[in-house]
Figure 1 (cartoon, rainbow, N blue to C red):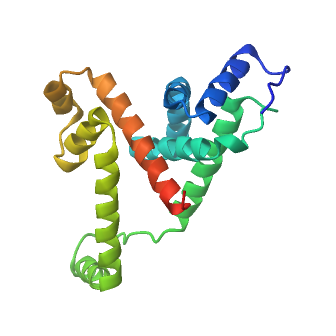
Figure 2 (figure 1 turned 120 degrees about the vertical axis):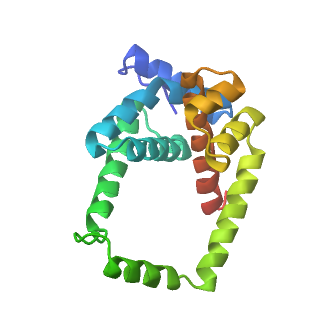
Length: 199
């Protein structure tokens, strides 16, 4: 990857960070994440108008970008490339969501209960086995995380602590809790994607 002289000073700095990341420096990934996480999140939030979806889409965008970082060609700034990945992924998400079956407009009643029963009864042994395998795989991934990330994931998703409760439990500012949780989820997402790719 050659340095493009036509890039801005900021873009050339990003390029140096990318070189470090590709050479195996994990802190370089964290630096890229910290530089662009909020910007990507707010773009996603404007597009989907849902904080939870925006956070998931932000994680996916960084996961895809980091997974394909070696393919990045610096003819454009890294930020341009990253935002293109994020917006394309978001458009795909919105397209899938618009094609998903719409819930009934009527109030919850017998039909809803029947629908729920049918849906739950259609889950065969194969699907249940896949769920168990997925849960076991995720547990292994979480256990392999650094202790500071692992504890956050356990408190938030296994013990269902609020951000405030986690902050109190670990004596951390809420902003730090949210940032570390985000990093932990990106790590988990990347690990899952790598396993799917057979890496």
